Image (cartoon, rainbow over all chains, first blue to last red; front, top):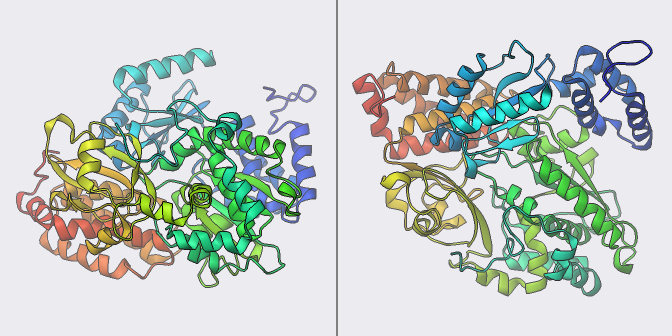
Length: 170
Length: 425
């Protein structure tokens, strides 16, 4: 995945052809605002999170004001307006996970990663965030890393998952 | 193990997805063929109304009645929205449905859109359900290829396009008017009602919003007829089957399709395999986080809308979360209130300030710092928040608090008297 523009050497928020595709879609719909969530998610998929420049780029692309973008970006908890690690762990803290040891899993993750909720590991790999119910109640306790849900968590299972993700990233 | 008729789950094999070949081989799209070739839109709506189907997303409003309010015959732009935000804690049924059988929903969407005479339907899917979104994308492409979607469907002269909206989190998006804002790309606070979406919904046009499981029932009602559907329920007035998502302190926490009206005891003991580790049953949420607790004395209640309303609880989404005898119900309620307080969109004061205040009181009591005045304050807050918030979120948050106060006030008293949680932590 290209994140740096080869000519300028600058960080790329979104590849030019993706921006063009969104511009074309925006021109094709009577209400371009319906593309906001898709575009913010595209920028985040590419860049990891949505910086101010991402809000401005999205606004220009859709012909909207930065405020129209910002009011959406700050509403959703899965749009990151601050830098995050390369993988974001969303640990469910709702009722079914609470009944099945979710609080102990939270403690385990804090210990293993050496960070608290809202923090990123010093190597920049993991950010730990709480989330409401993931809809994995039958497989509680559960967490979501990126877009993948992991259920029936145990200490050993968490070790394996974190190790495998670190290996994939290296 | 499950000998009850499997309708919504008839193609379900855990770990597999039935796409168009298996779906059609098992009778898929026959309801669509029948509806579009042999029935008028009005006849479909009348059939749904006659079936007595009630919304499966939590509120339980009669689907056919909702459809009959919709200006289907008016030649204006109008929309159908399918609510797949499923984020009520304890609820994971729509996910199972889409993982197993996405075409069932697509067939239901096409039939419903025909009945309502809309040409654009939106399926709204929550962020965490990416696999479901991918299944739907494939199913939509296959249905298009087969001529069930697009222009002049089955020679009716009627067109339909299905759009998939992938969301980015937040429970409030499950509220129908917040969801409309979410699809439009404006800040998804709920809208004031009236006007209701049937009059002014997406982009100000008439819009019908229904839950995924509700719409998945439609093809079966058309194929089997309303009489057959009504007979699937085993209570007087209970119709159809329901997807029950079991969770909490049970031996088997899985999703089962069971008849509406099945006794709670059978759900817990036969399907849930009983309470884990040989412990006793203390309480359950019968239909998701916003439904007041039931206790052991309610185990013989039929799981259906009216019997549960008579106990001042609700059928909700039939996500049954069970608590064993060692559970601190103050702690459980605190967890639920924290969820609602954090997911409040902040638009209205009773919800934004009221829920955090209730959370603070429960934290004090759970930590052993509470006093009896605070128990009175909980009752007061419940009265002041109920019915005074802008949307149903805060109302739902009062469900577990109401259950706590009605069935477990003694536990609140015990925390205050002992100056600690009597359950150990």
